[in-house]
Length: 202
Image (cartoon, rainbow, N blue to C red; front, top):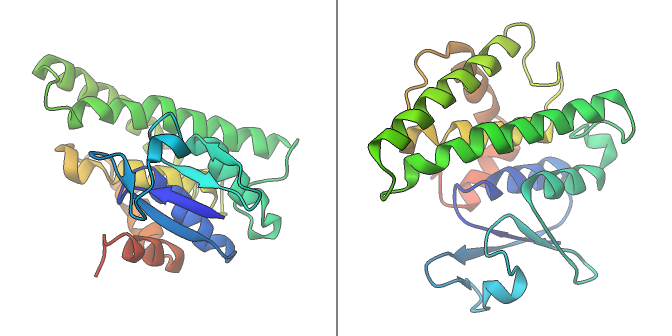
């Protein structure tokens, strides 16, 4: 299995999940400016959507979209606990979180990274993030992870996206539980390994 990634992008969640499983995998960096991979391939030929995460499976097929990639990785090592068993209510809770993080938090950060976005658009994005992260803050009041006592791929995804606040000028000060949560996840060996491999940690 090969993961195509960009340092610190949402593909970091898939990178973390791969380390959590202990399965063998390769990584290849993508330069979005040139649309070339570190190996010199045209990334648009690999994934016509042009973004990460993208994984190339052992049979040569390609899988895209963060939520799908994360669940695929988790299902390759069911005993990892990264995703509840398919068909259970817990699995739907995982999908609920992955959808919420993707549509309500991940995408809301986008205007904050867009130099062309009007200040009014950025202000609206910050206000929406405040409300959405406020919900997450209440959910973490009684449990260490999003689904309870066990780390899942939803936690890997939220960890990556919430940490974008450091580069987007968004203050997490009003969310002490989220800050504690991020610090707890950052200490995981798989997280450290993935971040070091992407050059995000020395």
